[in-house]
Each structure stands twice: as structure tokens, then as C-alpha cells.
Length: 145
Image (tube, rainbow, N blue to C red):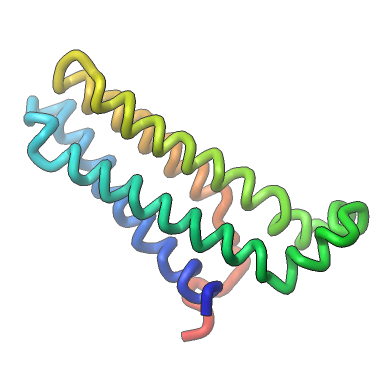
């Protein structure tokens, strides 16, 4: 159940990232006030990323892939599929969470709305890139449904 929820929530996280990125671009190009939509969109994106992180941590602790791998890390590192779920996916996603969180802080502290939008756009794009690189695309798009 946790895996199905984690896999399904990724689509919402990606949607929120795209919406926040589009709002930031609109603010850069259109001179829109940062507080009217872009700030909220970025906050929703960051909250969804943190929720996904919590589910991922729980899943990491109970997964039938990661638990045996932790018992024998040498064997886990030799198996590319296991290594992906034990090291590569969590590392990329943790970096994405850090980038998204830092983006929420530095965008808010910009000296003016244009800088806030630009910082938000750069940070969201980086976080989105890390997430897209770390998503297990080899798995079913909506498993267990």
C-alpha cells in the first residue's frame, strides 16, 4: 500500500513542480507580483516533496528490496537493480528535496519580485531535473491499480 501511494503521489509532485515552474516563468516575463500565486504554488510543491520524502523513508524501511540489501551491501552494490533502489534513487530524491526546500527559502528572501521569480524558476527546474533523473521509469506508471 505504501509503495502504491508513493508511486501515485509522484504524479502530483511532478504536476505541482510544473505548475510552480510555469508560475515562476510567468512572473519573470509578465511582471506579476510574487505573492499572487507563485509563492503559493512553490509552497504546495515543497510540501508535496516533503510528503513524498516521508513516504519514501517509510518505504525504504519496510521494502522487500532494501531490507535484505542492508544486510549485505557488497552484494547489493553488485546488482544494478538493487543498487538503484538502495543508493541511486534515494540520493537523487534527497538532493531534489534539499534543492526544493532551499529554493523555497531563497526565493522568498529575494530583494524584488523579479529576483524571487527567477530564483524560484531556477530552483524548481533543478529539483524537477533531479526528480526526473531519479524516478524509476522501468516500473509501471501506476502500479497496484
